[in-house]
Length: 167
Image: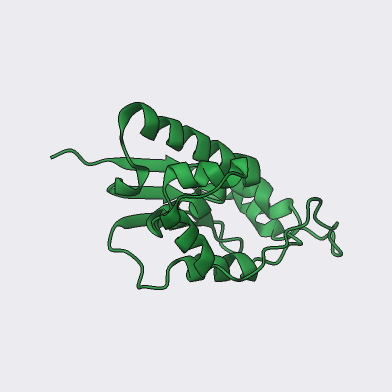
């Protein structure tokens, strides 16, 4: 038996639009529906794409959304369930606090034991984000009125306190 996994990367709105275009083209060229993947893995924009694929939104409907063209009847029904507004600023406000989010990650990265993880180390010296994400979480929940599907879906992130990867 063949198992198919689909890994979706980050990239903000541009990354999500890229996922939509690639997956729609893949479906058009091969007939493969990304919603049928045995495993979806995503981070950031890829996490949103994975969640909406698991909600039943097709790759074609993802592409239609980013192209500002009509969704299919099924896609529109899924979209209509989502009522929370998502007002993400085009240019997020500058941070009010310029202190690093977790300088200990940098120190552990330089002087700690184990394999070096430079990206995690640098993450600790960045400031915390200024865009609140509860509206995005609400929208994902609204797209899934039923319990989460049984199909494997892994959403990846980094715990800012510990620097550990979490799924």
